[in-house]
Image (cartoon, rainbow, N blue to C red; front, side, top):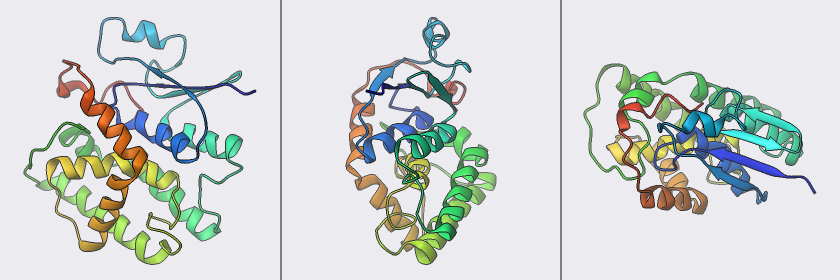
Amino acid sequence: MSQIKLVIGNKNYSSWSMRPWLLLKAFGIPFEEINIALYRGDTAEKLGPYSPSLKVPALLHNETTVWESLAICEYISEQLLEGRGWPANPKKRASARSVAAEVHAEFPHLRKDWPMNCKASVPMHVAGGLADEIARIDGIWSCCRRKHGTGGDYLFGKFSIADCMMAPIAICFRAYGAKLSLEAQRYCNTLLANPHVMDWVEQGRAEKDPTSMAVVSGMAG
């Protein structure tokens, strides 16, 4: 029997850890969860046996190690789901891969100014680059739902890796009070109502960790 281990950080704020965790949960793939608290004196030492980058998340599957969230999701889809992590339709699949890669590579203001915090509920001011990024995400959500959303309530109809990449953003938008278009808000609500997203948030809120939110962007990818 294949052995799958997923190494993650604190659920309250490790958005990159959440993404492959959510994919495994959504498709019912059993795995061992290894949770390593970040930003402590022994964090790098504990991550060393699992993650070549000394960051979370990392996936260990038999003799294979994969790190970086999107690479892990691609591996899960290819090796464990026979490609079902992405939409079956080629046009949908191309768009889904594009928006997932955009989330992985872009939106620096969102990551810096509105980091994921499952416990937060504080309306925040929006201006400049952050406002532009929120508008871009609103546009992605609205456009994908209109063009590709048939067959379900998620970004491309059925749940996919694209939704895993967007789920932490939905948590941020709720926490800090993002103003969205009707179509984008409806999709945001769908993500927040997903039982696995709700489970992650509940566990994140239950964590007791004194780590400052000022440093949460440095040990995940």
